[in-house]
Length: 217
Image (cartoon, rainbow, N blue to C red; front, side, top):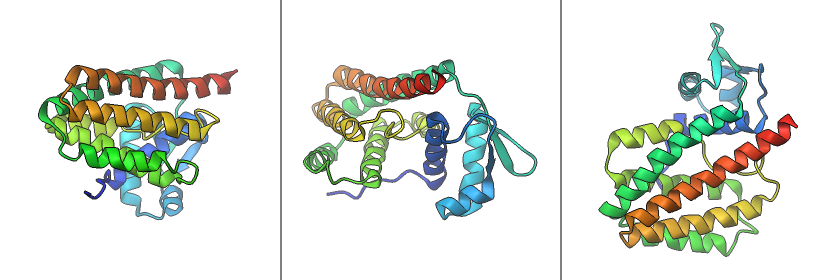
């Protein structure tokens, strides 16, 4: 089997911070320290600085001269706009991957089925690593570098934990969705792959919006 492809450190850090903001772990108006986050994640300040720049460009934070940042208020429209772009772009990537083919599809399906059989013992990192690798493989199979770059910037990782209380339920649903998606891509069914990806991202959006609504209630 092939080794799992990992996202660059700056993208991984960006996704971690995005989920912390979406979940309310980092609240509106809270100051984020570049140095403190780098130490917490046990990495250099460079990828954290790059992640801050990406988050600022998306409107999630406001950079400060002190090399820190302030978390901006996130509302439903912001979430919907972000996921609308992910659905449009990632559905297109799934379509193109199904047309082009994904040689490692069966290997990923096998990994997912093995994970599905051991969900009661799977840890968050193993799930997230495989989730990232699958999405990146689909982007790569789409064979459009600009599309991959845009998707990399929008990547926020899986919506787990904070979005719904039953994390194992999310893992199971997500695993089933990934298996079906990869089967469509493997079998060169672009329309089905496109729709499967849209449903997959839509459910993530609904999880995040549900949690946001709970916070605001």
